[in-house]
Amino acid sequence: MKSNDHRKYYAAYDERYKTAHARGVSWMSNVSTPIVMDVIERYRIGHGHKLLEIGCGEGRDAGTVLESGYDLSATDVSGEAIAYCRQRWPQYAEHFSVLDCLSDRLDAKFDFIFAVAVIHMLVPDGDRDGFYQFVHHHLNGNGIALICTMGDGECETQSDITQAFAPRERDHESGKMLVAGTSCRTVSFRTFERELARNHFSVIEKGITGSLPDFDSLMYAVVKAADD
Image 1 (spheres, rainbow, N blue to C red):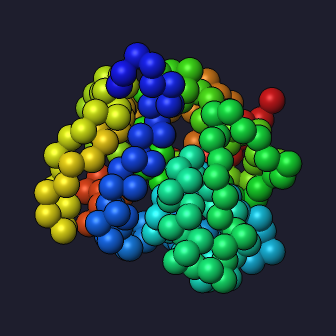
Image 2 (cartoon, rainbow, N blue to C red; image 1 turned 180 degrees about the horizontal axis):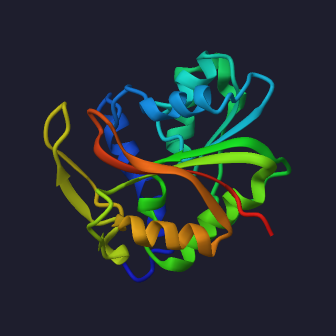
């Protein structure tokens, strides 16, 4: 990243999406994350409830939730991703909007908030806390949230955020692609739970899941606001 580049490091995925879309392909697969609908069904999230997705990307989960009849607001920091979703699902265009959860706020509370593969894009503790605080602020009193992050529950790694926009060659089903490197921080379950507790969440359940072909291993937690 050049010193005069004031773009937020975690917005680098916008560039990655632009590169893929210019080639006429999506960056991620169209396969939804199984645990999203599983949690919706197991915790009896109904069609009368208000749902929010943070970091919808190209809509791999939002499309499934919307087509299942739920009242979902799907958001992403990437304008490119939101434009893609609105074009792909024109009947749900008003459900997609650009949102930076570290700087924006919504005039609404939600019964269920979910974010798949978002928190691992945030590296400094302050940014990660900002994400959790956004979720906490926008949950209804009896609401729950599902947070999924890349990781195996043990290893901890983090990338250099100053290199988030630097071009990197990545494998893609359409072939090699030169895209923005983006950012990543993986944490252990111990750190994950410490972050949640620090931001006033109680863990209802946690575990390891997957979402092939995009993610072999995802840590997840279903949480609620902690009692005062």
